[in-house]
Image (cartoon, rainbow, N blue to C red; front, side, top):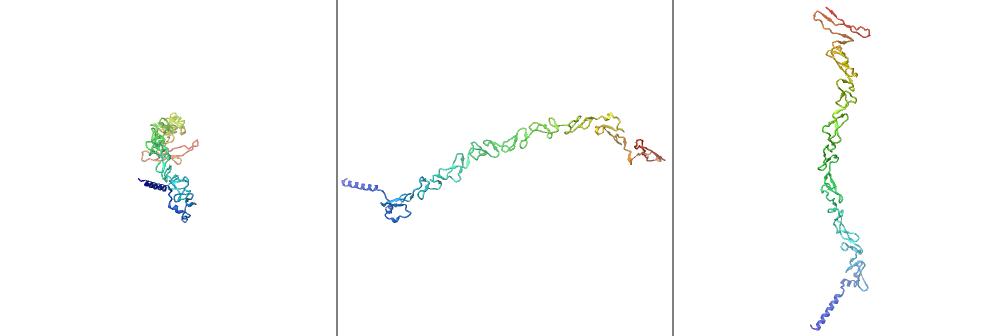
Length: 351
């Protein structure tokens, strides 16, 4: 290549390099200070003495139209429309817009990005509202209101809610399903509160406080409470109900302590073939069981003799003769020596 051509190329390259090294100045900046009328109150620059554009404080950018936000304002989640402020984008808050807003309804969680809900330890669910119960707590029989606990639903019990709960009030029973009361041996009743007494214990006269025993009610005694207590002091008697004193044959009195032998000691006290029965002294010592036709304490009165107006009239059978008539006897009550009336009978027979 000729030397003249080499010098020409070097000159061209030098000019290009010089031009590239010069700072690029936008056309508006060249004209901004040349035409002052283009600047107004909303412009964020000024022209210096050299005719160059200088951005006002708080503004930047090629056009000086970019406000400088508050120092520390998050460059991604914050922005500003005028210098010194920090406005937050949707989903963030705080003076520097460096705090995210969790998912609405998030109860026990936090966020790293806007509208998410990361649960704290012990909580679960979309809104972190479901506590994580104690490990091995039964999934259907148990529940919890706070993490780590295990509360049992109705009818279940135990630390892990795996055991059934007996019917409330069940005293001596167990369960195979919720709210059941199966009695253990020796107990009965809805709540297994009644003991089963000894097998032969009288159902009405006996009772028990624990299985297999037999306690007697007042007035009864015996292994099976089938014997009654007689009246206190009863000597020769027994009872069919408590506090009775039924005398044995030959004995009488309230306490059966009087031997009934009046008839044996007073032979013939009952007349006309009557039977003598000895009784207690307070009942008159004896009773006469009269044969038919007689009455009176000693069976001494013939029932054929009737009392009328203070006199005794005797009915005497008529004689077999048809020609003989009978007039009833007359009785006159003469006064005896002791002032009592004596009976005098008279018969008159008319032909």
